[in-house]
Image (cartoon, rainbow, N blue to C red; front, side, top):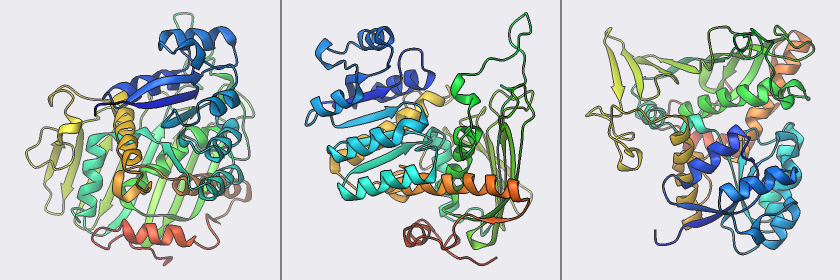
Length: 402
């Protein structure tokens, strides 16, 4: 590229972990330049972040509306990194003004808000994608490719988990009570732990298998140091094509800073990926053989591509590089103005995000009613089409068989 794409950022000041991650990731491969921003309501934090990023004084805004109105025609896209409940207003206005929008997950704190954003995207013929960075890991993309080729046979069962310990583990030499960010200590119609962790598990299952959740039976609990906040969720789920799943996530699992793991079982093989070993996937076949496939493996077809080789195999790429892969994907799509299609270019669509939110909402209703709850009364036609298009060898085609 001779010219970098210009990116504006709303939210994500220097003291924000997710903000720092997006800032580094967007610029890692020289595809984007951050040229405008409204990073914080706090004037000092906003200015300090702009100074750190070398944003021109006239392009650092104190109000996100002013940014969107002033930067029309200059920015290729805007990244929305504000707290989730504030996404809808910003995203809808950005789409109305013609911006391509990159939203940090979760897209919204309610299904209604997310559907409002999709309506705005369609009304203004816009572009909207949501960043779920774990599907940016090269070996995860390799696993998706293997499943599509039929390496595991017909899929049978999925185990996905994301245990963390942040609501129980004591802090520092003084063994102080944990102090999470304030936004983690407020629940909505969908609990914040589901918006934070649960949507990642939904997206990973969807990304890897192309399957969609039909109904769930879940329990939600408060087990940590903060009363009244849901912090632990366990879920049984029925997916399309008669696939069953177990999802477990929460903040009260001592010994796990981030225990993201996914295991997928089929008639001819099984696979396991653990985020703390980010560049390897363990494969088991129906003869008892086990193989560890890595980015440096001779048979690797996806993760061995040049775009993932920022440094040679044996020097693991990680969390921020996975985000950077997403920003390369977005740049390539926007340069061709191609459709944001998860099956073709790895990006998560607004429909993917809505499905995840519906699943999290169904978990809440299931826990309250102590019974199985359907995610959709009727699967939307757009999801039926996506299931068929992403089926690969046909094993994942849409079906409501139970």
